[in-house]
Image 1 (tube, rainbow, N blue to C red):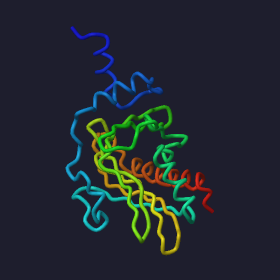
Image 2 (image 1 turned 90 degrees about the vertical axis):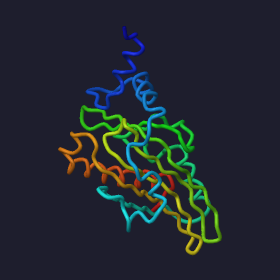
Image 3 (image 1 turned 45 degrees about the vertical axis):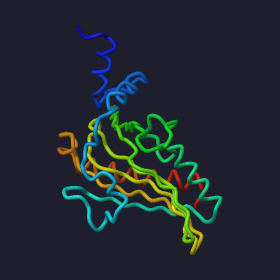
Image 4 (image 1 turned 135 degrees about the vertical axis):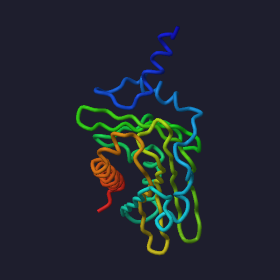
Amino acid sequence: MVSAQNRLHVRDTRQFYPRKPTEDEINAFLQSQVGLPFSYTAVGATQTALQSTPPAGYVVDYNQGYLGHGAVVYQQACAALEHWEMFNLDWVRLCWPTTPITSGAIVGVMAQLGPIHILNCCRVVYTVNEKTTEGARFGFAYGTLPGHIERGEERFLIEWRHDDDTVWYDILAFSQPKHWLVQLGYPVTRAFQKRFARDSKATMRRITNAT
């Protein structure tokens, strides 16, 4: 006999909700992904020359946004990234933004598309915190777990270039559809991927007051 608690756990491994899932449902979903492997094989590929050698069968997206100049802007952008502010959108929510950005950390990404809420799960693959004579970089990448409607990896990076003192926000990702609904409506999925990149860059620009 399945207990009520286990029934909640099983029920909340689903990803499509006709209404906003509760905090308990989200936590049960995230817990169901703990210990599961990544849902793709090229783990860590966003650290390499991904644009020139993408994994076979995956689409690569690269987006970059100017944030400003100098140390203050870089520090503001790094702090925003560390608190997952790039997900603070009116149609996307991170579960949960208090999660420390460390390798192995698991988060949920919930998107609202009309009346439907879609909940996906990712795990942080690696982090970046580099300082050289050429500049500084801070960020991380996360990869999809079985509880995600797509397969792939996405890297978020803040870069401060000392040669011209500019600060940039980069998003690099490779993905392919996993769920049959995503395969069926792939053009729509691609439109939402591009929307996320655009809205995420706009949010980071507002935080750093980029003009």
